[in-house]
Image (cartoon, rainbow, N blue to C red; front, side):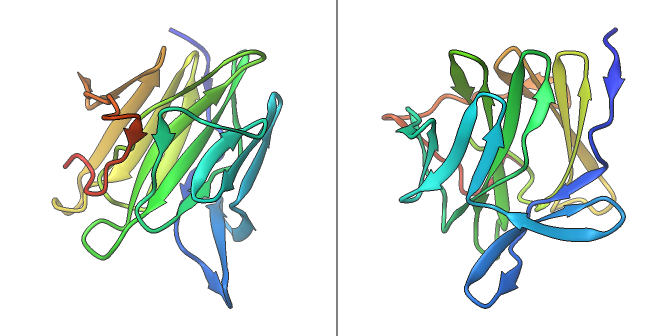
Length: 176
């Protein structure tokens, strides 16, 4: 089993309003607001530009399409790559879903959006796997565990179908 690296407790990928500004709160005992429009990885910037995600200035394909907005987490180092969680901001029925963007020296890989619709996200790197935990929006006290390993997302051990249709990755209602 790989070495476990706890990368900082909990990310609360949620809307924080300060006038017209949206931020990304990183919760690790004390909430702080970080810029949510760009994440500087070891391999170039990932940014939100015209409601699309770009890496090194080029739009990702298939396109990651958010519901009513997109926000980025801080980079998570994992081996020879960095991971950024992309949050699609939703409505009252599904406040948030997430996608994973993994970048390395020469290539990028990303997933479709997934999640329980919660904007509370806990992450942990275990070897070459990213664990993502979110509370269920439909079952009080239940946590769902997602794993990202070798480009694939599983939920509670079951591989998710994360293909993107017609060149667009979107999932407005989560997978619960």
